[in-house]
Length: 206
Image (cartoon, rainbow, N blue to C red):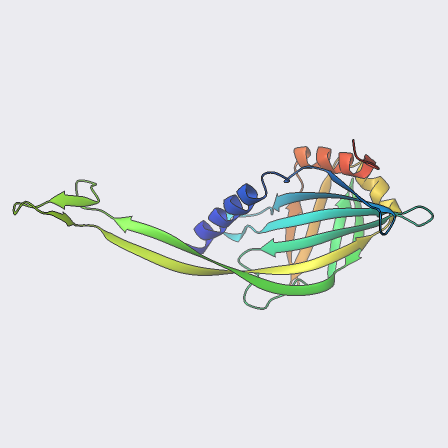
């Protein structure tokens, strides 16, 4: 049931972000005199379905004249190993085109999303209600609403200009996190790598 709710949650988050999901967005900040490029992507982990984890990652690139490009990833991870209050381990890896890059997770935290799942049991004929002989319409179904709380881990990864160049040429990309030393691996799909190459190349609004 928790897996079912997690899948519903994934669909809900994707629909909620449907106007900006996968879009490379450029923001010109006249106060800081910089340019910020962002894109939000969703990733599903590898492995058995019951052990799958789901990550929402916002990739952020900040550019300012005379300063190195600042690159970071803001991460939310949902799944069966992310229990109440659990954080990701501090050490993680990015595997870009076969180059395994060790990274540290910063600003770690955890939070929750609460939702509900409703199921209805019907009569043998498959109806939600049956007509009784006394002339009344009597509900013969049983509806159960279950409240779920899904925990997720939060973290940030700070990267550098070299990593940005690697993303600009990405052909294979895996992200590996750990929870209590147990690995969770996200293999980035081809369509998402196309978006990441666009993100890396973008320097100003179109």
